[in-house]
Image (cartoon, rainbow, N blue to C red; front, side, top):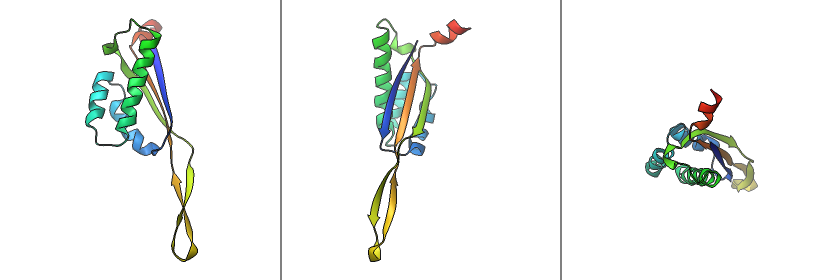
Length: 118
């Protein structure tokens, strides 16, 4: 059984978020939350909240589900829309600053879908 959670328009660049996504991909959810608790990256906080949301979605779909059996089967980090702001510079000039956003999709699974498909 799979459950999914999405986080859209995260005000953080996708390259920075992918560093954290690579750390937790394929791990059990309890171990992933523990590793994110000690990660020294700003993207670890919203990623931990997203894991907890995916766990809640899985339990909501199947109340008899054992949470300890869940693992992170898929994490994708895509680039969202870019917001452009203007930074005033000397002599009346202006530079454009790009504020990037990320879209994160996380799928947690208990491994039952792979055994049914085989």
